[in-house]
Length: 224
Image 1 (cartoon, rainbow, N blue to C red):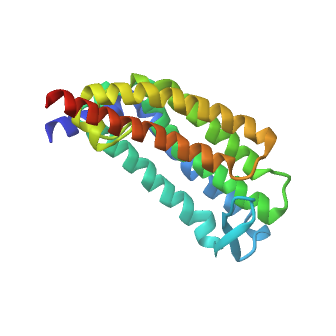
Image 2 (image 1 turned 180 degrees about the horizontal axis):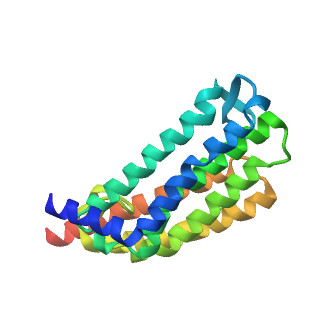
Image 3 (image 1 turned 60 degrees about the horizontal axis):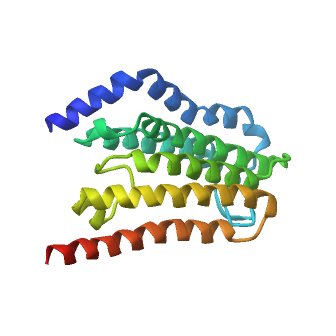
């Protein structure tokens, strides 16, 4: 418990201004929705399929106010769980910043996507999602090899937790795979090959997972 409390203090002390800023930005779409309130219908599309067509709807109150409130809770929980890790000091500084900025970005993408669809703004949601998704994978892929063994960030598998060597090797490979995958997703924003992002994401998960398992088997055989 002492480690968790100390981590929360350090997280807040080192990132106080950023935490306040990102929390405000996560909630700020509420002000945007209230400003547009009279122009919005009572039932709003809040979930979209792969092609950008809506497949889920919510009340105006939930779309404008409920979603940002949900995201601020997620935002604060991410900060809490990250700071409670006894190995918090092992996190690269850039990865801590990614944790802090994910929810504000999602909040704004969601708000702009929802309002642009309802108000017929010229906004290609799928292109922006592809750019942000690909860019995020490129950034995370660059920092994955630098993440030391911990409980919250990284490729969390039974085999990476069981062996620090497995963790390090899996993250070195995972970093390369995620970086290349991110680049391919960015390229597909131009190519617009349907479902390619899903296929790339699946490969990005499978390759490090299979590698980690096989490496674990190899380590076990050496012990025997």
